[in-house]
Length: 257
Image (cartoon, rainbow, N blue to C red; front, side):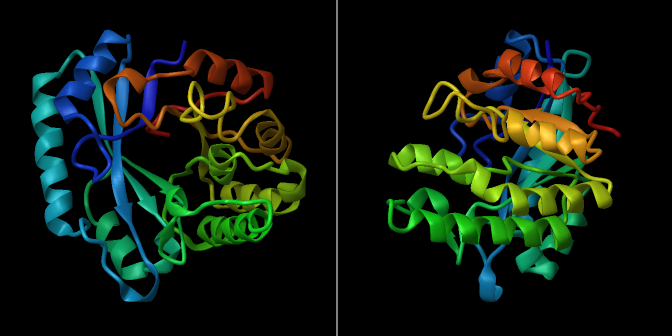
């Protein structure tokens, strides 16, 4: 079983629900050997600064991380990570983040035009245009953004399920191939994210069709992440994720690679 969760959030994140210490205790209880705290840092259009995101936020993150590293030394490997949203939009912000000693940068697209996808009500009439915009932003991130792995590539399908509208996966295979080729060309990887499981959709992000395409294109680097914002979600769905990864003939890489 996979015993590394490379996508968890603490209460340092604006949306986190538990302290780093509480998340570490839960990870140990679930048999995890390694975690990466990937608390959010969002970049925006037009030079806008996030309400929470600045140097002090990152310094507070590293202070808490170091306390946990000392407390759980020998019991749990704790990696310094960040989920860096839309890094292609603001080079100065992204470079500032990269100046901190992170082990792992997870690149994601959460916002379209500075509006979080979770705030958008998808309907049969607008879903195609919004999904097209999402994948265009993901393609730009794959080309120009700062990341080690791209997170939840087909994140839009989670919000389709949330709103009860269909997600036409085949429609986006063309641009998904472009995104995956960019990832591979840059020597980067992708994440298999289990946040949908047990909630709105019993699929990983991405699931088998995209994982097979990634492998066919020569992709090899994959990380698994629960996207846990609460202790009970750490490692959730990893047995199913591992099955999908093996069926796609992809080896799960170590965080240090």
